[in-house]
Image (cartoon, rainbow, N blue to C red; front, side, top):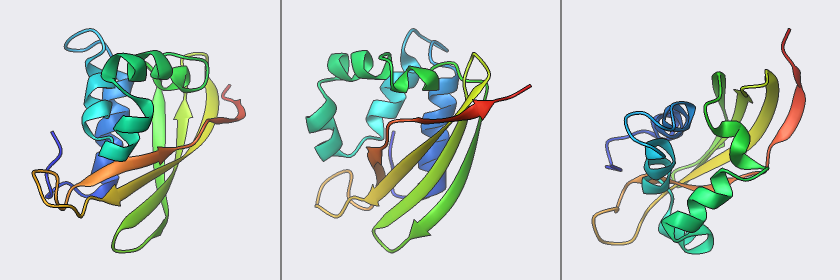
Length: 130
């Protein structure tokens, strides 16, 4: 669950670790965890949760499910937005890059001050590992 003590890098790491082990401890628990850390505006655009699951399992984002490895590099940041470049090694040993943006939630309520994902680009293939 999001809380305002979790740093932007950790938000991305938690989501990626969940997707890396999507069906542990339960089927689709990684996708559900990723959904928890999605910004409410993002949830509106990609939801409800069942639609989000279909989207993540689709052609573009399916490479995130049960991927073998990932690397997270911060590209830029300010007080409200942090942009990361995420490189993922998928199950077929192909590398993909994503732009992954988290934003600090500023409205009152339980999410105030939490870093939440606002944008994940479609993946760009960047070659295979040996």
